[in-house]
Image (cartoon, rainbow, N blue to C red; front, side, top):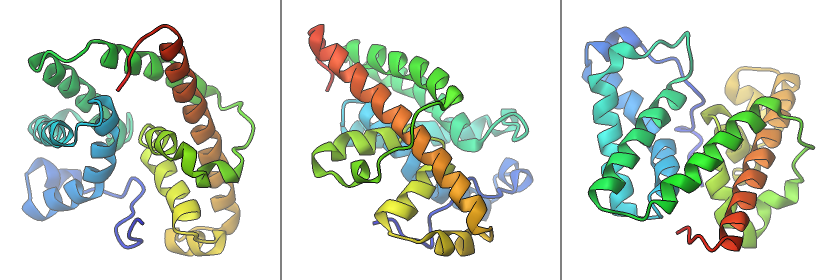
Length: 211
């Protein structure tokens, strides 16, 4: 279960201090994003925990070295980190001569997710889906591909069983705003879940082995 005291949704990072490599700010930045970035990487390297850890480390080192290129006005930190992670994953898999089906699969998923989540015309996700044990792996996989704010919102509601009132109090927001956010997060999750599960099925039909 996620610790409520550490769950963050695109927090206010002091980028001036981060660019100066202020130790306290670097630690806060890493602590905030390390788990979601690792989760994003884990499935993309075939569930290899050691390799995922190495790629995550390379991702953060690269990000810190190039932090001057990040512009918070153009996008969220999590999205920027996952962009760097994709490049690190490709390089790592090439170095280890891993099966090319894996990056090909995720390239297909990414292409479909970008369009599908941008549209967000899916029906509301049935709450029961998040609780089904037989879909647990796909649920975790789908969550890691959502914007960080959606990940945190869904985890708080369905894994920590927080009420809308509790979530609103935690965020310093209103119940109405949290209801809208939860609705959007559920739509995004359903889109990601259906895209990934559909692509997995297509891969199995075509005989592609996806770890």
